[in-house]
Length: 108
Image (tube, rainbow, N blue to C red; front, side):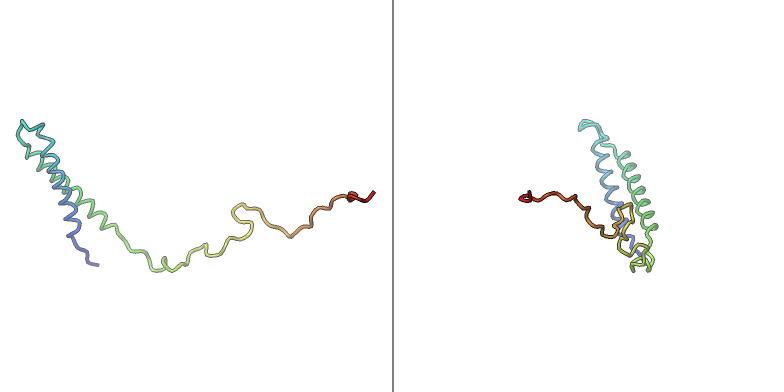
C-alpha cells in the first residue's frame, strides 16, 4: 500500500506557518518593539514537527477492516424474540373475564 506524504507535509506546513505568523505578531509586544523572529521560528518549527508526528502516527495506525466484517455475518441477525430484553411475554389469548349477569335495561 503506497501512500503519499504530500498531504501530511502540507498540513504540517500550514500549521507551522500559522504559528510562525501568530508568534511573530503577538510576541513582539506591540508596534514599538522589534519583531521576535527567534521565537517565531521556534514556535513554527515546533508546530510543524508536532503536527507532522501526529499525522504520521495517525496514518500508521490506519488499518483496513477484515473482509468478513462487511458481509453481515454478525451475531444478532434475527428479529427480536418474544420475551427478550425484559419485555412482557405475550401468552395465549385468554378469554375476557365474565361479568356477572346484570339485568338489562327494560328487563324488570
